[in-house]
Length: 207
Image (cartoon, rainbow, N blue to C red; front, top):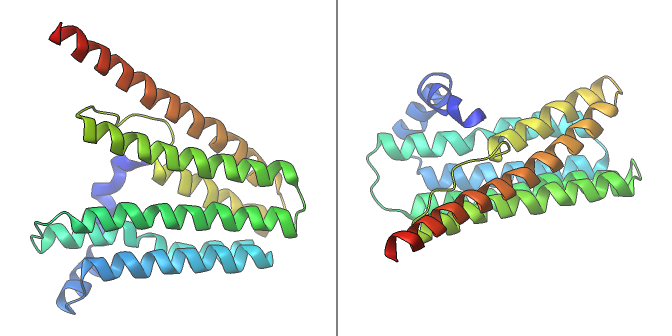
């Protein structure tokens, strides 16, 4: 759902960073890599120490790299597909670190097996969501549907986590994790359903 605002962020809010990095001769791939390393370190280090709101701020400083690198590649006229491959691959690492770090928080500090498990559910379903779309694209189907794509999962976790820690209202994060677990599972089901319909229609047309 939040993906519809990508053009605004890339073309307006993040344009100064895009232009500056291009002038400095920085490669979009470097931005992708640094962003992934920053997000991963922030999640695994800060969350595992119990420093949730500090971790959210640190992660936020790097998470926009996912928008900056794509805008840079388009602006410099990059034509190869490696950047898209690298971006998608490293996104899975960043997602794993984010929800893995939050799982460590619930294991070592909040000591809640339930919410540790929910973190793992969101992590797994998020990975399957991305895989389902990639596999559908490979087979020639369109699976760009769902209520919880990657931007939704990130915002849906980071914002409640920040205010849960600052306000000491952990129910905010608990509710967010339940919502994300359900939404991510529904998204996987949606993508399976739409691809099934397309596959049956293709088979019928061939018959």
